Amino acid sequence: MRYLLSIIIPCYNESATLEKCVNSVINIQDDLLNVEIHIVDDASTDNSFEIAQKLAEHNTLIKVHRHRVNQGKGAALRTGFQHATGDFVAVQDADLEYDPVDLKKLIRPLIENRADVVLGSRFLSGETRRVLYFWHSVGNSFLTLLSNMMTDLNLSDMETCYKVFRRETVQRITLEENRFGFEPEIVAKIARLNIRVYEMGISYYGRTYDEGKKINWKDGVRALYCIMRYNLYRTPAPVKFLIYLFIGGVTAVFNLGLFLVLRFFEVPLMISASGAFISAALLNYLLWIRILFKRKAHWNAFPEIVVFSGVVLCAGCLDVFTTSTLISWDVSEINAKALACGFGLFLSFAGRKARRNGEG
Image (cartoon, rainbow, N blue to C red; front, side, top):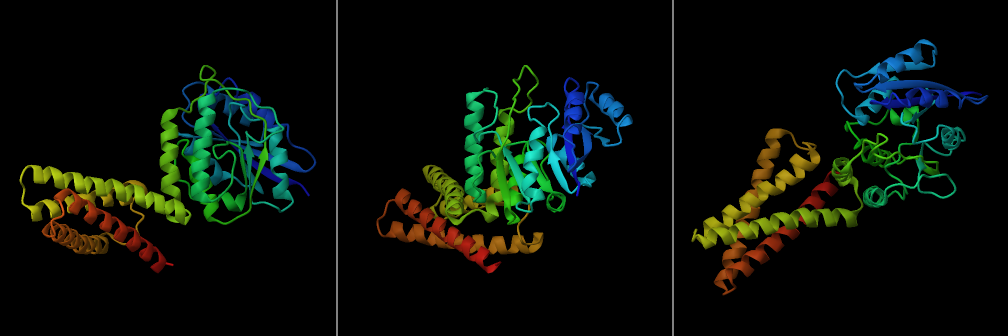
């Protein structure tokens, strides 16, 4: 039996290596494996698109898709995945940092029905790897560790390009990221599917920035955001507690700080306590819903506002009552408000946990 491997090649200004890359991919065909190639040109400003068209004219295995506006690697892969028709789907960068010969090894667990996704790791032993930037490897290791903590997978290289899927698996995943945030996003969504994930060592011939490497520190920051955004609802309980503690702690400190500022300007106690709490509650809402979840809360707009307002009102009354009661017991204002903030932080975590349990 012969299998068809759909290989997606995202391309942006890779005229120097594109033709060599495509020929290397075609050469991995054998008695067991056929390939179809989807080159997705992401609005290149060099002649990459023209090269891709010429290659497609001479080989029916090659299909070319083009973005009129540059959108990023994630967007190019999303386009390629939509057009894939093979039994398996793989990603191949046009810069040849990865050797297509390794794809034959990576699809073996898929053919043998032992895996649904296979990732190629640059850091497992036994393969050729170019020695490059130390701090890049540190950043990669940190991102992989953080991703593993959130997904409960034990990967060695979350940011790897080489990811090979069963077609039905990758087409179950809705991708949202346009740039390099695709990597942590798809790992998070793979983890949600509870499928069989394997990892194997691969060769790596990395480029320097002078040679055309495109990823930069901004993509690292985006990767951190994506790890949080796409994992937060399903992260293991210890990690979830730390995240709740961090965001709750930030808003609690804001609550306390604003209270002290208002009191410094001799704003009445009740107004200071309630005003600081309401402001902190709005900050908490912004951090959780607007930034992390992008309106993925389980309420519709109007009920969400009603419920949130009711919870804030009750919690605010409790905060003001606790603060004023402690002050009446001769506790200093700063200590009274700090204790009220700590109590509110605990109730916030308990309430969120109860809500998540209620949703099943």
